[in-house]
Length: 338
Figure 1 (cartoon, rainbow, N blue to C red):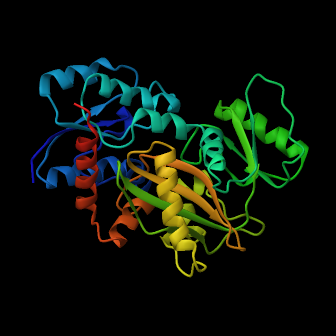
Figure 2 (figure 1 turned 180 degrees about the vertical axis):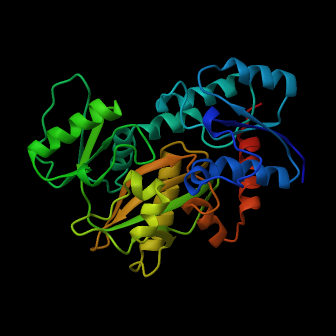
C-alpha cells in the first residue's frame, strides 16, 4: 500500500487530542470522528497533518504549497460558521488541484438544498413526501394539498439541527410557530414535508462512477417518552445519555418486506448518480407500513466515526474501519482530474 501525505481539515474546535484519556463522555463524543480518522490513518502508515479551518483559506494554500499533500481528508461541515459554505472549501481544493476525499462541490450544493434534491428525485419517479418551502423575509402560505401532520426542518442545515419533537405540527398555528423558529433561531429557510409514519432507514454508499451500496441501517427506539414520536431529533443523534435513557440505537435493518432490500439498493444507486454524489454518502428513507419507500434526504460526507451507522454498515459488509478509510482515500485520488 502506498504511503500518503494526508492533510486532514477540521473545524479548529475539533482538532483531535493525542489521547482521549481524561475526557468526559460528552467531550469524547464531540471529537470521536476526528480522533478516530487521524489515529487510523497513522496506523495505516500514512503521514498525517491536521489543519483547523474556519475563517481563512490561505492556510490551506500555504500547507499545500509547503508540504505538497497527496490528498486532503475533508472533515469540515462548515466554513465561516456557515454550513452552506463547506462546498466552497472543496471548490478551493479543486482550484488548487489538490485531491480530496468525499463529495465534489456540485453534489454538495445540490444535496444541501433538501427541496432541490426532492424535486430531482420526484422528477425521476422516486417517492418523496409532499413538501413546501418557506423562505425568510418572504410572505408564505401553506399549499392546500399539503396535509397535516407535517415535519418542519431547516432547508439546508444538517445533523438534525433545529429538529425536536415540536418539529411535527398539526395545525396552521403550529406550522407558523415552527417556521418562525427555523427562520429566527436556526437562521435558515424552512421546509415542511408530510410526516411519514414508518421505519427510519439509512443506506450508505461508496463510489464515483461505480457505486457500492452498504447494508441498510435502522434507527430504533425502545423507551420513548409517552406521546413522543420516533424521529431523529438533535438529542437522538448527538446526546449519548439521552440515547441510553430512551433505548435509542442503530442496527442493521431486519425483517424488511419482500422486495424492499433490492429496491433500497436500486434507488440508492439511482439517487447517488442523479444527485451527482461522489466519494461516500448516506441516503435517508422512511418505509411506510404498506411498503412504500420515501426518499427524505441525501448526506454527502456523513459521520464516519466507527460506531456510527455508516462505518457500522461498512463493517457488516466486510469492510473494517481501516479498510473503509483507505477506500475513501483511494476514491478521492481516483476522482482527481489532474
